[in-house]
Length: 318
Image (cartoon, rainbow, N blue to C red; front, side):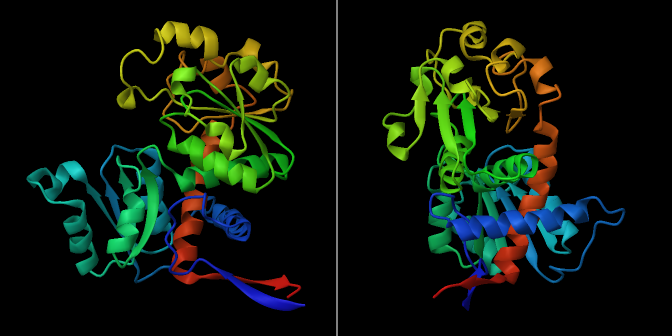
């Protein structure tokens, strides 16, 4: 046996499509350790003291931006938040110049959310600080995928062999894409259901199962991940009406009974209650939606720590 170093030090976190299984496992294991910090009376630890993080958000966010901010602060880093509405972007400054400006201030990590697919990859090419993708268009949202996997593993003990149903607006969902890549790499079976107008063409080529009826996706599911209907990204006519969507695809208690009795209910938030998910399901005993928020903080603490501090040795047979 020999040892091989698994490390994320200096690595841009751009998406789960390109992340390896050992890297995912390292983040999930580290997140478990970080979660214990959140439960302390005094949450500050000096792990990243002297490091600087900029949250650069070109889109609105509550959960992701706040959890990244708290993650950095709990680890002792200096954290600055920049929103597009309060930056020189409103004066016509380009993304490249904004990145160069932040880089010139000596920051270690740029956590970035942007409306354009591939914006994080572009940032990683032109800027020297580590780039952590907090969501780029409809491409990926890697830390959301990681926190979803962490939440499932915490409750189920493992990811391999589970049937995970992802329901709703797959077309516009970066969350769905990160979940698809991450869950399949970890051995889960992913089933999708939603209106045909909200289902990407050729999505089956990623290895998922696509169902026209939501009931077929829910049948025997271990996990039901309900996606938000993203009204801000949609054009008119993708489904007849909110009422019609809720009737055909909304997850209510009757439909939930098709899944396993201990199936987990998840949602990335914010919820359109009564549209994609009924209140009794969202706040029911099977829901882990609030726990997802807490786990998101732990996962983001793990990511920030690992990209600055490295990883661990693992045994190999090489």
